[in-house]
Length: 455
Image (spheres, rainbow, N blue to C red):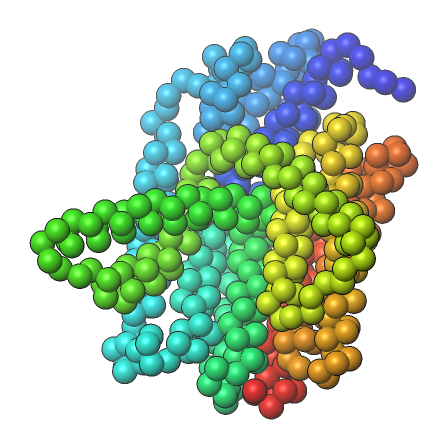
């Protein structure tokens, strides 16, 4: 039966309120479901006292004492609502001090990351002389500090902090204890896969006790996409800044390139991760408008790209070049497609009915699935011709994992389009599958070096 009238209006307001909380991390580790139960209890009491449902909702939100600051922010973004008048009034406890503390901590941690990047040089480990050491440890200079930032923000318990510490210490041990052959493939694989494995630890810290919930994992997916966008924007700004430094110092006959390469680039790249993460947390209302627009812009473009490529392969009968760099390019393309899919899912209202953009998503999924099958065929041909190696086995495993993810995502999306399944099922599958990538990355870091004799 379809609900109509005041009850329907109340449910719409509660849905919007709940969705707002889930998009934010302002309530940190508090369970949104418990807050909603409390809100509904307040509404029930007030309606029982004779108030209309809309009036009861307004007053119940006002009574959510621990959420007053959040309610005021919500009201500012929805200025057309009557209850703005109830909650926007300024109070002595405005969250300005908390925001300033967040900013100070984030910039201090960014400075600490920059110091960590240069710290090995004090012990004679120069970046130019030991590039492999820096490549393996770059994520360890940054991600533990990022996890610490979220541990502080979410006020995580000692049990979770202990497990996070164990994960980072173990990662540091595996990255540095193995006797890698300089420039070997297993060293490169460790440098590429260690950040992926550790990103799961950052996600657990970010979710703040909600990692076991679909909403908590989806928040982390959304954060990852927004972080990437902010980081790229900071990098572009840093590039412009660097160009002006080079120009101004060149005018007086000073070459600033050694400073760029030795200090500005490595320290800036490390510190920018912390700064971008703070910006995501502090400026979500801005990026939430930007990211879905970018997703809707590039999803059709990539769908056309894959469809055109597959059509050209069928039309010309040409096989994919099995050269290593070509296969790496295919894997990067599939990773971008997966990122678009994940972020599109995170930005979409799960209650909305299927639309035209969902059809484009299915086309993108189908194209990515077929492209992955072509890449797997090429990897198999390369293994048949040249035998097994660390790179080929790693690529084979990653493409198989991608194939499973894309295939079942396509099934669930088609079911949703045919109204035989829910969008929540697709969300649950995508967020539950994220740890599989981290698990495979951990296997590559831990097992591959000794398996392939550290070559």
